[in-house]
Each structure stands twice: as C-alpha cells, then as structure tokens.
Image (cartoon, rainbow, N blue to C red):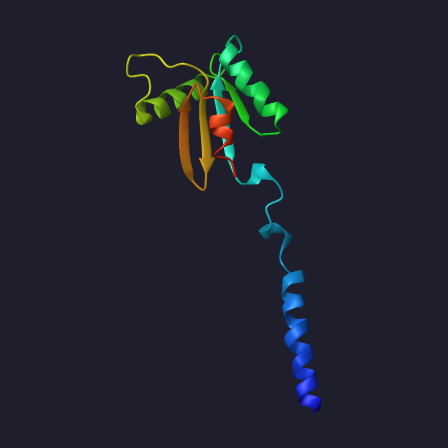
Length: 121
C-alpha cells in the first residue's frame, strides 16, 4: 500500500517538475528571435519610408541598410537580387526586403508591409 501511494505521488508530481524546469532559453521571448528582417533602401525613397514606418508602428524589428551610404550592403543587395532573378532589366524598385526564417531567405522587391508581415511567425 505504501509503495502504491508513493508511486501515485511520483506519477503526478514528476511531470510537474519537468515542466517547471524548462530552460528559459528554449522559450521564444519575442518575434525578433524567430526571424531576421533586412531592409535595403535609400533615405529619399518614399516606398522605403512607408515600409519602415509600418514596421515601427507594428513593432516589427528590422535592420535597415542605406545603400547610398554603405557600398558593401549595396553590393550584397545586388548579389541577392541577381540570385533571385530581380533586376534583369538593370534596376530594381526599392525597398529590397530579405526575411530570414529558419535559415531560409525570402527576398521581396518593393513589397507591401502586410505581404511580409503575414510570413513572420
């Protein structure tokens, strides 16, 4: 009888211990840890400004690169566009947005904010 009582206590108590011992680092704290959003644009671009404003209004974290001020990021953007088949006519419409989810890159040319935000977990 004693062993049965002890077994029942362990049966119900042990799962609670394991649940409460879950590592904090295993829990996603916010959306920014689940994705990376890179925005390539220009300061004088109204499409870029609109996209960035929507990100800020909706608490979507992003990294912005001004391609006029950073030639390395401009080259990086051009390489990504070339690989994705954008700009075959020699130009692209900004912003170029690279959404990285689980090591997969989703590249957009002048997307709507909603189009990108719908993919963010």
